Length: 231
Image 1 (tube, helix red, strand yellow):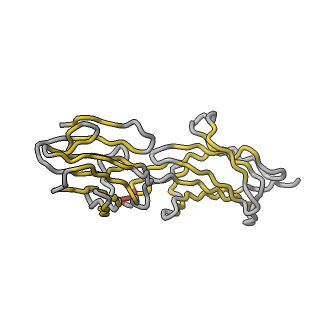
Image 2: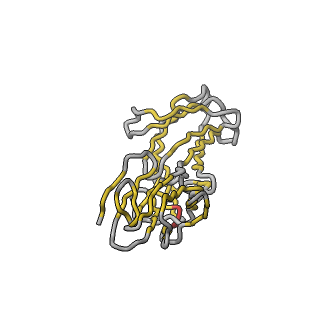
């Protein structure tokens, strides 16, 4: 039976369960999904002795035969595409079972977020010249009223927005161009829907599949500006 659902932290939540078996199992899932996360390393500590445990293909760590006393489990290393939240769980093994926060438990389910992405914009002209001092604004809403961040291209024509979350939609506009170039009124809609453990990276810009550096979670977008034609 479900005893308690705890979802009061920014980066992870967990639920605890109990049945009549004297065993303890941790499950690791992608947030708001039943998708298990493998290769998460936890450190189990008892009487100052440590052992490292790794979640399997089912996102599971199963523990049996635990000695009576206080134990702790702490996340040491997340799957490389997920946020490492340094989660620590203290629980007590008694003669009549395992207790967490005064509740008798057998299972704990943790949820973790996919690592945030960055959006890297490269601004050039038709001759592949990098354009410096072009300003872009990233918005949270389609009406482009809720500003998330403002960035200006450097001497290489590049600016970068950090902190784009999975399962979100963002809107980007060029808000300050350069003299001598046509005005760019496009709104770039960036959608993210990723399941890294399934190698699923559905990231689009205006419905088009975009260039992604999966290893470093970088979304790349090239924006071209055309010089104004001289009469």
